[in-house]
Image 1 (cartoon, one colour):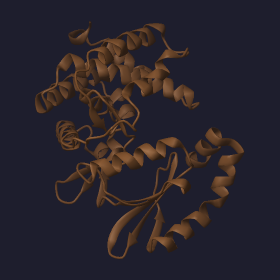
Image 2 (tube, rainbow, N blue to C red; image 1 turned 120 degrees about the vertical axis):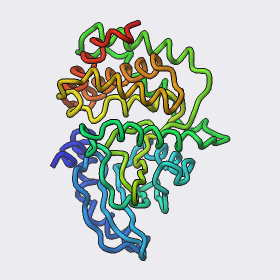
Image 3 (cartoon, rainbow, N blue to C red; image 1 turned 30 degrees about the horizontal axis):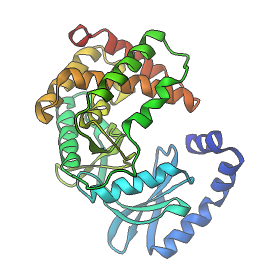
Image 4 (cartoon, rainbow, N blue to C red; image 1 turned 30 degrees about the vertical axis):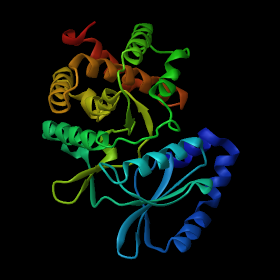
Length: 295
C-alpha cells in the first residue's frame, strides 16, 4: 500500500501508468532472463522487488520507475562487483530492471537490535571495510556527497539551530576531505542482510563518491525509530561511534559530525518526499544533547 502511494505521490499520472503496467514488466523480464518462482517481497517503498530463481540461482528482480538514480545504483553495483555488496547479474536501464544476487536467508541487521547492538555495529563496520577496499580507477560519473547535501541549502520547516549547524558542518567536512571513496550511500540496517553462516552483505547502493567517513553515518543512527525510542539513546550513539572509530580507524569527532549532518539531511528529505520527519528530528535532538562531541 505504501509502495503505490509513494509512486503516485512522486510521479503522478505517469506513476499510475507505470504501476498499471507492472504485471506486464514482470512477465517480460521473467521470460527474457529465465526467471521462475517469483514472489513479491514485503515492505516495498519505492521499488517493486520479487524473489525468484534463475536456474538454481537465488535472485531478486527489482523494478523501478525510470529515474537517473537507477543508473548510479547500477554503476555502483558493477564497481563493487560483489565485494561487500550483492552482485548484479542482469540489467535494463531503460526499463528500470535489475536482476541481483539474493541474500539467503536475508535476515535484516535490524533484528540484532537492541540485544546484539555491538555485534550489529561490528558487522556494519566490516561491510564498510569490504566496500572501501574497492579502489575504482574512474568515479567521475557518480554524484558527489556535495550533490546529496545540496538539499540542506533549501528552506525547511525544521528547528533553525539544527539546520544551521548541519550547514556549518557540511562546509567544514567537505573542505577538509582529504581523499574520496566509492560510497554505498544508504547503508541502513535493512540494507545489510544475512548471507550464509555468520556472513552479511549489503544491498541497494545509492552510489556516490566522497569522504570515506560519510559511510558510517547510517550505522550510527539506525534503526532510527527503535534507537530513538530507547531510553539509553545517547549512550548507544556514543558506543557505536567508539566501535566504528576503533574498527575503521576514523576520527570520532568526524564520525559524529557526519552522522549529525545526515540526520538533519534525513529530516529534509522526509519533508521533500512529503513524509513525517519526526524521528529524524528526535534523533537530531539526541545528538545535540551529547556533550562529548559538541563543537
